[in-house]
Amino acid sequence: MSDKKRSIFEQELADVQALANTPRAEVQKQSKNQQTNRARARTNAIMEASTEDLLEAQPVELDFVEPHDHLEWKAEGVQPDTMAKLRSGRYPIQDKLDLHNLRVTEAFRCMLQFISTSLEKRLRTVLVVHGVGLRSTPPAQLKSHLAHWLKHHPKVNAYVSAPRHQGGSGATLVHLKKSRAAKDETKERIARRLG
Image (cartoon, rainbow, N blue to C red; front, side, top):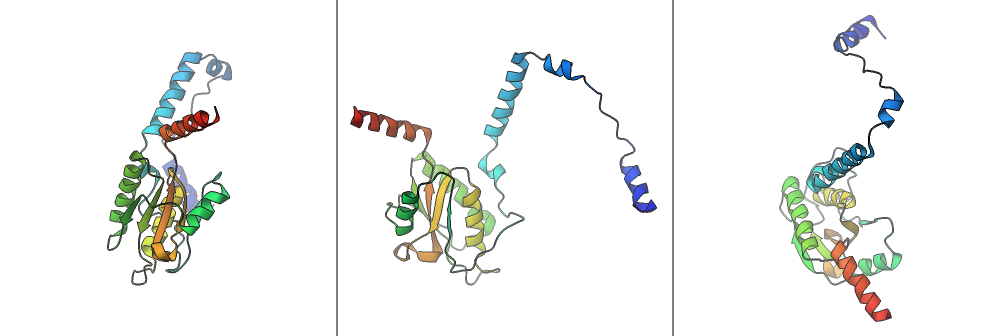
């Protein structure tokens, strides 16, 4: 390290103070109640973070796709049959969002609101129309951003470019996760059928 860099480094750290060394035994003595309260507060803070906080409208590291590229992604645990039905368009489209002519940040807000509303309505398969992006700069800008947002959205199970009759590479079929209430209903329905 050069003398100039060392000097700058030392100036930056001039007001830094060492942390007090707390013996491990004292840390372990904290009551279970305090530990539980801290864990509960940490969990609440995570739960209060909105999806918008977890996602970025314009992520720094974005893999751009080509206008006519086929999009496909699935979360861990999604069954191959589910993907096959999604690919072929056999799930009924329950709602549709058109993002044509929107700026990236506007499209981001619309997409978040659309998914939130769809989940409230207990919808599972929705269509997002974004266009292929031949005239955007860079090409397929909105399509690339949408692929990134959907992949990182905690309530998205899978997505795939729509079959030709549903919009082809200019639209994406999105399969949403079931809500807790919908899962409970399914369990009850299966239990009634079995017994």
